[in-house]
Structure formats: C-alpha cells, structure tokens
Image 1 (cartoon, rainbow, N blue to C red):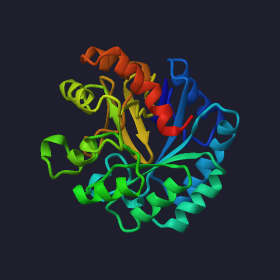
Image 2: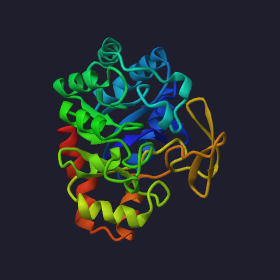
Image 3: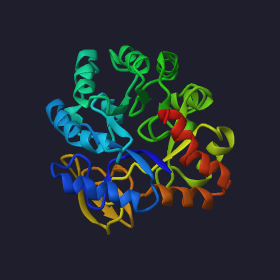
Length: 287
C-alpha cells in the first residue's frame, strides 16, 4: 500500500528536527502495512519548510520514502483547517521554484488552492516538471476547479474536506471535480471526515479515481491525549484529532491499513479498496 498523504505517527511529525523521531514516524506506518509513503509537511515559514525538506532528503535518497508532499502554505484562509492562518501565503512561482530546488528532486506533490492569484501558473509549472499538482484547502468555485484541471492538476486533496461538499450542489467546486474523470480524489475514511454512506456513494460513482490516504498526524499509533500540529494545540479523544481552539478536525490517527478496513466495512468491494491503496497511487506518482 502507498500512502500519498501522511504527516507523521508514533508521536512525531515528519517536520521533527530529530532524525530518529522522523524514522520513528516512518516506521510506525511501515510496520502497519504501508509499503511506501509521501511525507507531508504542513504550512510553515519558507525558511522552516526548507529546513524540513533538507532533513527529509536522505530518507528519499535511501528509498525509505517515495517523496515529499507540501500541503501549504498556498492555501485558502477560509478553508485552512488545521493550518496556521497567519503563515498562509499567495503562490509565487519563484518561491515555489526555490522550494523545489532545495528538494533536489524529492518533492513529489504540492497542494494549492487554485483560486489564489498565481496558482494556475504554479500548477502549470508543476505539471510540466513532473510534480503532482494537488488542489485543496480551497474556497474556489466551478470555474476555479475547471481551470486547475485544465492546467494539469491531477488529484484533489482530501476530497470534500477543507472545501465544499457534494450536497452544496452542481455549481460547487466539489461537484465539478467529482464529475471530471481527469482528476483523482483522495479520501480519509475514518467515519468522521466523511460519513461511511457517502464514501460508498463516491466509490460507486468514481471507482477507479479514488486514492485512500491516512492524513495521519503524530498521534497515529499512539493513545488519546494532547498533541500539536505545527504551532496549534490538538486534543485526540476516541482516536479523533481536533484543534483545541475551535474543534476543527486536525488530520486523522489512521494508518492506511485501518482506512482500508473501514472502507470495506462501509461496503466498498475489496478489489476497489485494493486499487485505491495500490494501483491508483502508483499511477498518480508514476512509480
């Protein structure tokens, strides 16, 4: 199984300054059946992101990770979720290039809100250079969704979370990406981010386009308690992670194996779950 969206586990984030703690987070997921993963980094200052990327490069070069995923800082303030809003930025191509240069080929995916000024230019650049352009944490509309897909965006970050919902109607961002066969859809299947009944509906209508993800924060593989995501305080109760400040969901405590088990329990056929955890992420990342 390949997890393309995972922030940490075993009590640690992939942004941790201690190499051993990063290894612990990787091992937490690999010991549960995840054969390969992208290490996802949340919104931070550009300098901090560059330092975090640099620490992860050796793991990429040794083949312990499939690459790095930057989830931010180019996200919508209105849909920032558990990202620190004061650190969000407008996309700037030269700045993005500087992050990619630091990554030395390790950065495999970047999530961006396509309605932001400069976003479409960045999406086109990422696609042209073989980097997966993901769209998410967006307050965009149908036109923004269409423009992003036309520019080369190939996956939606945690579909229906930190964006509009399918129930918002045919003119919503969610409905537009749902109906476009050119783009894959990440799903967090924990019964909280999306109701199980809706998970089944999404699989039925877009069976080959779903990619299961953990979106795991540091508490994956650990007990309930107090944690952080970036500078923000998080409380994990009954395996559900929420910001203490406003109760917003702060990632999940899933492993990909648990996500797959949940999808099967929701009624999704096993062959579709297997495709969503193996073939679909391989195709997206071209590995």
